[in-house]
Image 1 (spheres, rainbow, N blue to C red):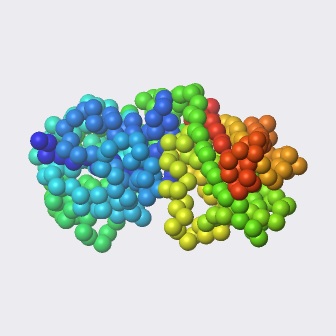
Image 2: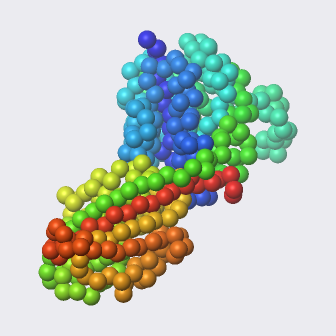
Length: 373
Ligand code: MG
């Protein structure tokens, strides 16, 4: 059994990345970057467990992709690491950043081969430029540029991080205890992804696949008198609405499920449960806007949507164009990419008895094409 745990840190919110998509969720071929990184380490073997640290929202989604151990991070890299270390029981821990996504296998092997030599094994690069300190040139042979991943003795790293100070990496925390540090050769290819322009230096990231993803949604609500009726974010002028925890916009609910289905993100009940009072009588366009935000930050672009509203009553044709432009505006896509159809049930069943409405929706997504930026 291996004596080393791998922690992959990816809780940052990509504020410097400069796109709507979080960098952890850029698609490389057809998988998100964080998963490509985790699978690269997993294929190398040698880890008792792989722990991935990210935001609460990301962790919920990541669990749908793979069965690693996921932990919600903290306010800073150090807080995230301290949190994750509580789950580490092996004598050694290798800590890497998801943003350092193209680390050569040979560099990881050099680090792992030095296990036990010191309290922390650190890859470094030599300084190649002339360096000045306080106005005077210094001997660059004495200067090293620190990289990650770093391999630490777990109990020493845990102890080092109990200090009040913030450290920029594990080696500086461990060195502050007077513990030993051992340097191994790093790699210029272990470049960190911080800005979109960094992608030019990270050839291991493949362009996203151009395949489309399809999702389907279905929802039904019964009528309730004395409530305003909302459909596709538009108020329908009838003396009844829909019985629901939210505003009852059955069309938007079906659309949200279609979008979540295409993204592999579950369903409306998981994200916005009707047991949560936050969503009591909520305008469903707010739920749709939040769904769209999630889809975009997690690497997708909305293609088109198509919906069929099955209703014996009310008559919806007069509202169809407004519904279409309202949804197109919310989705951020062109009007012709939103298609809304209305039909009856030929007086059959609960719809035919004018007791309620069912809506079917499909949506397509493509991967955000960072290569075209
Ligand atoms: Mg509903």
